[in-house]
Length: 117
Image (tube, rainbow, N blue to C red; front, side):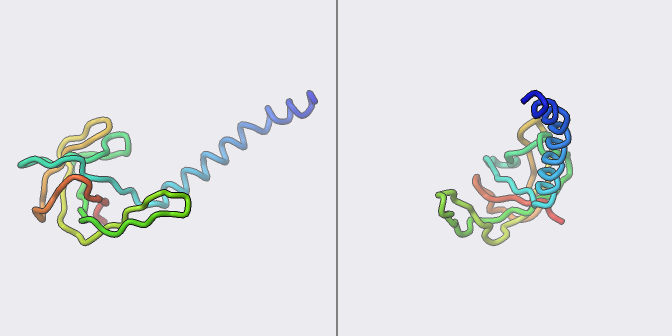
């Protein structure tokens, strides 16, 4: 029994490192999406900040409401609808950011945003 514990202690750091590397590669391959939280006359609040690496000047495409799909396990996924405009980040906070519109006018809370490529 002690031999198994010792072997596990020796292998565990490598197992954890491999799992972390695999998870990072998987996440890096996905396109980040966020949402508009609120809109006032001149500013748009979005649901991400420094926590996901945002910085001032990043341009997002904004999409209207699209279809919703519910999985067999009950999870609902919202698909983007038509593009309604673009916004640019101007102030970044730890978990949220402020943006300003640069194209379009039909912005409202709940709309999907994606980094423009």
